[in-house]
Length: 348
Image (tube, rainbow, N blue to C red):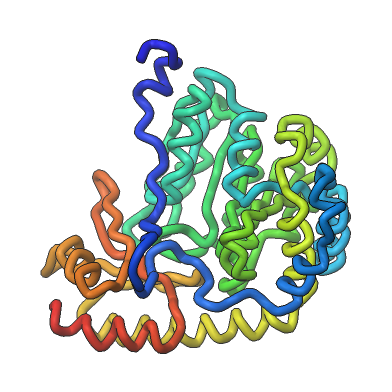
């Protein structure tokens, strides 16, 4: 139809991982937390009465910002909340890049980045990782035409991390805001949150979906210079976080005991998965996320994905043009991982 803008008519759109509606699957394909959220979250949500649901939610998610500020050691006016970190990424592209402007992002990386550029009508400029998943200075070179740069850290699909020194170097060189997408950072050894104080053009986005097991609730936040946060708040939807998500996310971020125990459990299973899959012949970079990127030179990984699906085990097959393909496998519960490791050898 000709009603749509040209960039929307040609848009492929973001393709989410499979979410089966029928039958029982072992889901290791969308990086959800393998465990249920803490009881404190469920109790907080159950405590919301009907009167609160009949009213609009707090547009600033004040309760969450206050709780997060205490936990993270930042000021509450440095925090902006969103309907998942995807909402925040949308706000950032909308705020900084207009039609014809350029947004730079790491590649292979989160496949939503080019989609957001296409929707906005701006130009996406991917910068490729080295084969060892390092990033050279080309990410911040020849950048005077840029309006925004986005770097996933830990990266998806690799789970690899760039160090704080390199992030600071990029922030110092780039003439635009640098967004560090830390959706998986709670499973990593380091983060960039403290760097926000040092560089006014640095923005960190985070999700409550992965480490806090709230993918179904849809809540994320960013941390940035207060002036940036105030300006960005003008761009977001009026009530972009609903009452239940604010209440649930607030309880979740305050429950640090659960978060610590859950994180260590997933990291332990991740280590076991890495060793077992490596022994089966998969090449796997060192992951600091809740998934592993598994490639092979001797077999088509798509065939493995399809065979696993027939056995009702879902993993994510991903193919990146001019780079290669592989299986991104979420760290599940120990029984889920055992089922995967038991059946995989017959497919190899």
